[in-house]
View (cartoon, rainbow, N blue to C red):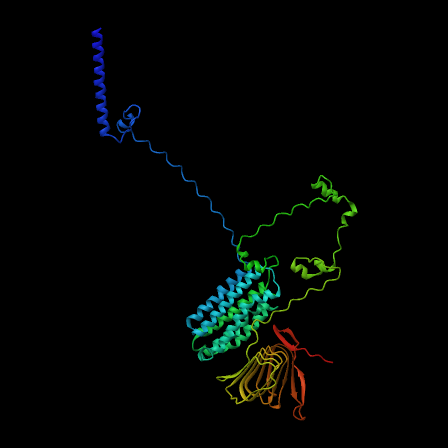
Length: 515
């Protein structure tokens, strides 16, 4: 029994020694590597996994999934292309003619001339904006049209004032006058005949342009090229309006309103067509089935199907009212009375406005312009080297005393000129209902593009030569021989000519009416 107890005690001691040894090992390990493990609260041992040799590195994380392909860009709303008329104006007029003319001016001209040319360039830009608006929009009311013309009118007035403020530019005043004559060229937008309107503007400017070319043809050819370049601008403008605006500024009957265009609606994407309207709700007496059955039920009513229709008045028939066709909208009938005829819109005021009258001697040239209802304007103290230029006068009488070099009457209406003697020629251009009396002598009278005119000759001027082109109703009164002074016999300048081919040549004779 004591031997068994001794053995048991021995075993217990050995177990206690082993336990102590294990505790010492645990304490040493805890001191050396406290960070690698954690202590289990229940057993007092360090956790096995952290204490063990350094764990194998964790496997790398799986590669990230490839980035998703970028979403296709959302198509921006399509910017509408410029209408064809706008593109043509940009290419044929502004880019091809106006810009080269501006560049040529800046290469040699004085600053006042460059400033006026810049104003004219802005006129074309304003005109381009108006053409773009008219090609995109429906024609607005007259008040809106007049407000749209305000920039053009302001531009014309500024250009016309530039002539008055630059009179001290003696060396360049001819160029300034040439440019100011062209200022109203944008007025074709309110003219029923834009092509002839631009043609008239060109002829008026050519009068001063020819003087510049005559003066500088042997001095500096660049001035001659400058005049021709701007006349080419007017020629190209005329071609353009004859193609796209034959009878005036063209509007788009299917376009948007001017208000929508000005608020930026034109820059947005085209508006899709509206969805179809919902089917009309069935009347109380309609069959309960609805849909196609209800439609056929309405159709099968026989003659009653037309009872709800009203008679269309003639004023609402598009084939009898051109105004309705132009507007594409038939107005609702307000009453049984016959509606009034549509009122023709009044033409806006001339863009240029009334210009200041002028009666002044500039160098050796008398300038008489924009005189209206003047019963007696007398030009005195004249000399042989002076010329008289009468332009855009109405219902006025001009008396020229003494002997002058030349007399020019252009763009006048109902104007009478009494002249004593002329050295070279008297020129009449686009001056309907003019009256010309020569009390002395004149070698030549040239009349162009004029309807209705009266010429009184003295005995000393019977050797005059009269040339006419595109004229009608021109009469010449000759003094009657043997009668007292002031007695005339009127004879008409022939208008009808007969041309025949003889021996391979054209032979023209006057057609005379007998009887």
